[in-house]
Structure formats: C-alpha cells, structure tokens
Amino acid sequence: MNDQRVWRLRKRHQHIDAVISRGGDRRVLLEFVVNGRHVPAGRWATRAQAIAAATERRHDLERAGWSTHW
Figure 1 (tube, rainbow, N blue to C red):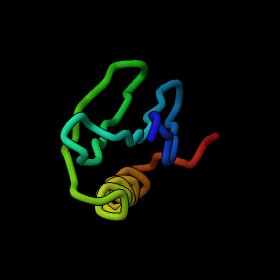
Figure 2: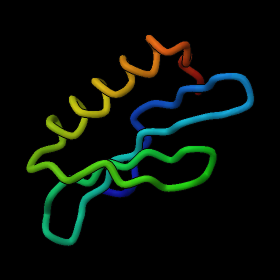
Figure 3: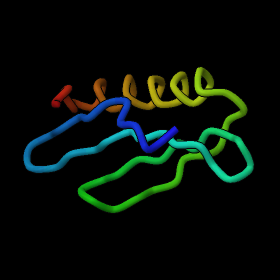
C-alpha cells in the first residue's frame, strides 16, 4: 500500500490531511499532515482500524469548525 490520503479538512488558510501507509512491520501507519508538517498518529494491525481512528479525529475537528476539502 502506498501513501493514501483518507481525508482533508480545512479551516481558514490551514489544512490537515489524514494519510495511511503500510509500515515495514506490516502494520498500517496513520499520520496527519498539518500544513505540510507530518505528525505521526500511530500504528494499527488493520487498515480498518487506522481508518476508524482517522474518522474519529475528523469528527473532533469538524466539531471544532474544520470542513471537508479535496
């Protein structure tokens, strides 16, 4: 699996991407890219678990006023 953007949010002139990829240990890596800066979020055994974690974070950000942007 190559890097795959799961979602992108924006607020004013800022943006956050959720990106998943496969790590060397076969786990799925989740990181957030905040205005171009990579912020590791964790490793999960499955893609579904990483997506669920990204979705939970997206919901938190949307409640704080961030909106979906592609």
